[in-house]
Image (cartoon, rainbow, N blue to C red; front, side, top):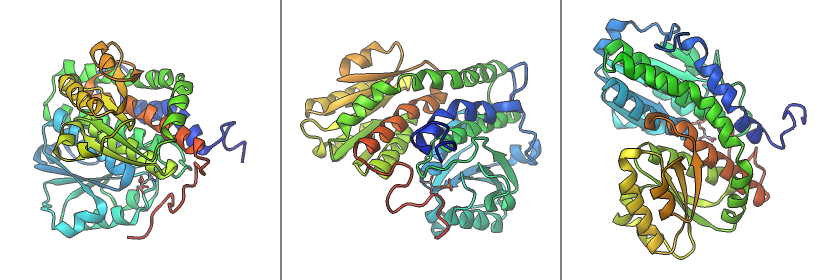
Length: 369
Ligand code: AGP
């Protein structure tokens, strides 16, 4: 077993450290050698069919759903197609409007999640084109979808998903670029800019992993609390949800993720002296607004850890401590911002003496509806 973990104490930690490789492998030959375009040769959907897409539905569960929330933002920004996201166990029951011009994207690490599979079947029954993003070649989802983008994260053993999630983000960035190239919604210069930044991500993840010790200290302090909050706006809210889920499932600490601007509409009542708040602030256009939300919680006694992009000194002044991530394009920031949150959850779980790889009540693959 030690050998399988390659010297790491847990599969989760090993998988966190495998992320730079998972990013590189998922990008692989899908990026042209001149760095100016993306080729998803595996897709059968034609450019004509892409031009006819009137809406996109992204359907998944848990962490894969959180990747889908990032996917919505990426596709809408890059390809200007309206996107809705649904939790798979809800999708079928709300009579969603699915036509043959709907692209339904299902996201599943295992490719065996019963709720996701049921949503896929419903989408196909209604005539949609179904594209699966999955980590398991030959899985049920992969077999039944019309198109597949495989994430090359390698087997994920820990119940808490890490490298599968971030590889799903890479798949969405590639898909967003592919749609944009086909639809002409981004200039050649914009596409090259995103690809250049994309290629830097693996090295930037390595830089973050090099600071794991600092996060261990923060996590040990966090582990003494029973409640905490994650806040963020836009893409940072999607990452906040994922950070909160990760923490809940392995540390059993209750946490809530909130859009930073929504706190004042009720949840702010829960902020009390000493409560830890993790504030994600990677989106430049939203920075000023996020800082004012940080001030709201600080004024009520919260102890705020900011997740900030390097050079953002204004933000650093408004929080109690900061974890700095390397600079990238705002649209790609989730692939970096989530890494410290994974490490915080891991170390908080350890500090509480939990079984990191096999948290109570949970299974790796959920094959019941
Ligand atoms: C992730 O940490 C969770 N264990 C869980 O939310 C998981 O992402 C969800 O069950 C979906 O699994 P899938 O990607 O295999 O479909």
